[in-house]
Amino acid sequence: MGNIRNGVWTAGAKLPSENELCQMFGVSRVPIREALRSLNMMGITQTRQGEGSFVSEINPGLFMNSLLPVLVLSRKGMADILEYRRIVEPENAALAARNADESDIETMEATLKVMERIGKPVLDFSIADMEFHLDVARATQNTLLFSAANVIRDVLVDYYRKINEIMRVERALKYHRLVFDAIVAQDSDLARQWMKEHIATTIDDVSQKYVDEAEKDEEEEKEEE
Image 1 (cartoon, rainbow, N blue to C red):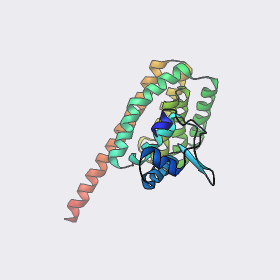
Image 2: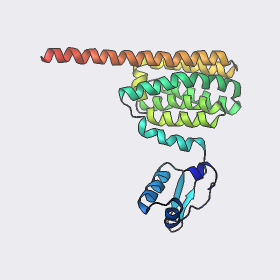
Image 3: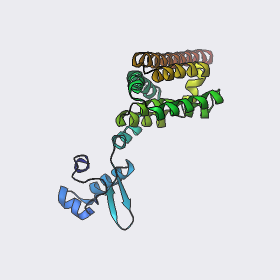
Image 4: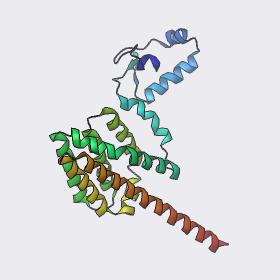
């Protein structure tokens, strides 16, 4: 990994054979094969049958793929993700207001129209909802921010239908439209404000839902006793 990150082995380069790697690092075949398998799983290298392993085109998003195993949708994991979004996404919106080009604006508007057309908390709405947040991250023109949003979207998409049921589609659409209008107006402060409020209300709604569920569980346990 270090030789790839440091540019010793560049994109498209063929890695040394297993024997050569064993000699190079002074280890047996077992850890070498495990390391190669991990690099392949993360998309950092690709193996071609009969040819060997080659370095993939490297971008920041590849190294973020290693986050996926830890972003498990437990209650704690979801709280961590929402807290991350509360910190990052308002700044994404502010940066998008400064950097979005015409293509970014058209993409965001098209996604909003899809959400408005669906108009109910089904999986398709949830996918479009997360797509809008990805559109905003893309509009920042920052590769790392966009890659991080991609990772979060992949983890959250199935869960997000429940979010939209909790906070209501109408309110989700309201905040997305407010964020979009602020980005179009190139008003960074307003874009940040609306996104911050949007994520904060989402966290409040989800937290309350967990409290309600916990209280319900306690009541059911008392009834069983």
